[in-house]
Image (tube, rainbow over all chains, first blue to last red):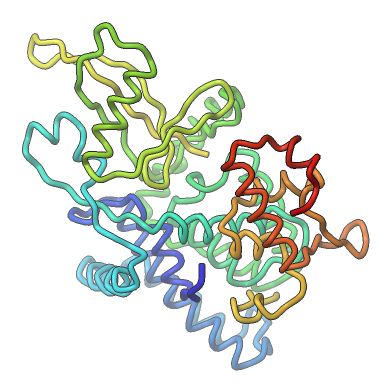
Amino acid sequence: MRKEYTLSQRFALIGLDGQSASHSSVAKRAAVRGIAAAVILERFLYQEEENNGQDREPEGRIRQELAAALAKIKHLNQKKAKELEKEVVRQLEEDGVLEEVPDLLGCDMTYVTSGIHLTMYRSDEKIWLSLVEQVKGEILEDGPVTLECVCLLWLLRESGCIHEIFSVREQERVQERMTALSAADRFYDFLWKQEFHKDMELAIRSFLKGKRKLFRNPYLAGINLLFPFLDRRQSIFIDFVILGTDVKQRRQAVENYLSEQGHYVEEVRRGNETLIRINNMYYRIWPKTVVVGRVPVQGASLTPVYQ
Amino acid sequence: MSRQRSLEKILASEYVSIGELARLTGCRYSTLKFYTEEGLLPFEQAEENLTRRYRREESVKQVEWIRRLRQEGKSVPEIKKRGKP
């Protein structure tokens, strides 16, 4: 990554990646609220720099203002959210690091046959990887953690992106590190306690917490089976003739189809299974037959896999 | 509460952290960690509990060299035998 991106741009590159560009969704709204929070945090970072870290008490004026501003994000109206999204997308598109491509969901048989055209955002692969790996390198490794890294982690947590980046074990390590950092630094403690979830999402999260315990199982070679509280990706079904094909041919058929639709597709070996990496995310492929009316349709189902 | 170094500062410094090395090379953190544990990526550590730091220029060259050999189909043990670029 050769260019310095602001906190909101960095978060947008991670948060908007794979999200619908043409339609609104719960996950995208959470990501846009994250961008709004990042814009406020940028102002705070600038003020902290100006004050040379003098306003470090939790009662500090800047922090009070920050808490009040962050609280307003919960009620960010749709018009403002759309304007913010457009603005940040415009900046990143001009830099050539974010693009609008046909949505993966649009490759699902139901959408294809309905003639619905969907688009999604796709971040530059190298920039995305560089941003994510730098955060991982800082938080998972012993040693000091920068303010920018904690801010980004908090934004990722609040917008439901954390499970897409960290594996189950890594998430536990992040929690351990953040507990230790919060005990040592009052600002980290203050920030980590802030939330800009919607109440509805919180309700869904608490409901899923129970489910999460049930599914917290480390089988399948370290693949994350935790239930994310926001569904940022969906399973899709692609129809083709599977009769007489083997696993490799089915995988190839899916890869060819998705490549034709403009997606970056790559096979990735993980343990004893092969996953498909589509754009920046991983999917597992299953042969499947769905019945439409009375007609069985053969094909394959792609299910999101978390780290 | 430390602040993130700008790219300019990173490029001017002798040592970098693993996160900064990931940023400079575009390599995954887990991959860099693996190379470090395999002894392919030398690091310095003042005391046992302190952060590992890498010599920037040498480490970037080493990562690029490993990456090239991996693309040529060499395995990690084979690269280990070769040692350095």
